[in-house]
Length: 400
Image (cartoon, rainbow, N blue to C red; front, side, top):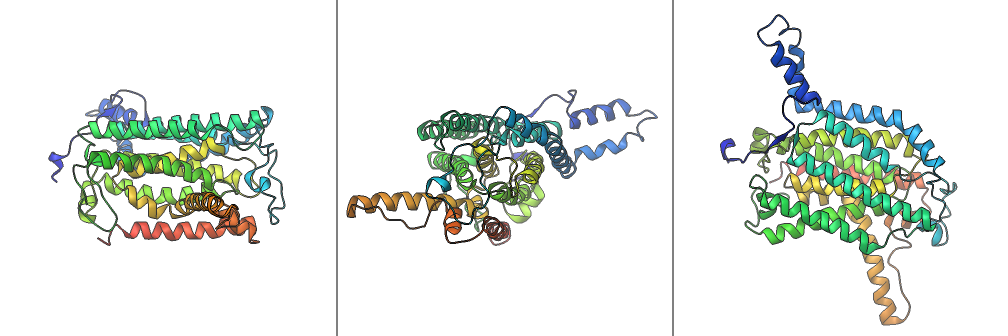
């Protein structure tokens, strides 16, 4: 596909508004053909996605370090802490868990989402893809906040009803899918189905199938990250590893030469999602600083639902939804363990009168805790597995 054949992505705001990219361009235009042209020529660096991605990461990290102590103190003051028994405690306790997690502030996802949004808004050029991702992040964070607040108000780990969460997630995913389908510049993201290790669409003109895949990816990963968020640093660490993969993929997808050379789908404007991934990395690293064992704050559903949904949305926007299944293999395994455990338990209870289990406990990280692994062992080994999945996912760029 020639560059001229690719529908254009519209950018906001106008070049005269005050975000860093537009401000730098405006200053250069004012200085053009004057004695100030050379002194301000360094502002050209703001044109490069790599520079702005690094800037977004550093900004998000700095904001996280700056705001985290204040946010943690604020959450403690509001008594937004985990005073209810978590799922591991409800099931009879984990012998390897020495420190109780009760009283630790939750809803730390507010910090992650806030720093991500601010950094992306400052450093990214606004287009449909960026704004759609930011909007979805806020919606899912709001849903998670409602769920966390319900847990605190009711003093139990159930929180909001599952039907409410699934309904909001599904409606958001359907909106994203239909919006992309109806927009000429992005319709092929839905109508053409791409799979790893193959350079051509396996199905074309299949809008309904693409819409289903979009919904499953966004809703599935939003909940998968939520299920993984059960040990200090586990969910955010694995999210960071997958984000690195998406940072590489978004940069390639938004660069016509690289996309053509590697024979992956080119998506006009997707390069700006690299800046979003940079902000996600910085915000995640900043949060991990305070969430590593023993955690001073939990992200809660406010963060996990939003981060998981963001991973799914990014994969859809760069036309690589199934590559995310590989990169996020740990999340897939965690979600699959819950589905298999629940399904098998209900099946055996109907057939034999007594429910049986596949795992000692689900999600999967609690199974290994039950087997005697320390929390830090589970987290570190899951990190290693996530890195392995990330390497395999990146290998799909050349194995085609």
